[in-house]
Image (tube, rainbow, N blue to C red; front, side, top):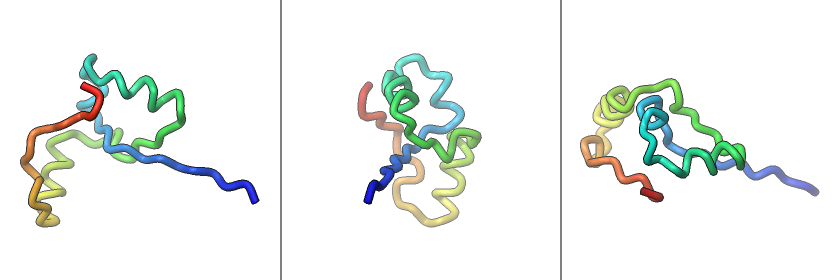
Length: 65
């Protein structure tokens, strides 16, 4: 049977304002889903801290920069 692969990323609303995020164009062409697109980076960090994630305050590290 034919299956559909869904790929998610962690792009947030602040990321789309950064012109160096060249991977966003490719992601849009390949229908990558960005569930955090309407969430700010500050809100993502706040949620990560609340959940006790040890990397909540680490610097961003986009893979294609």
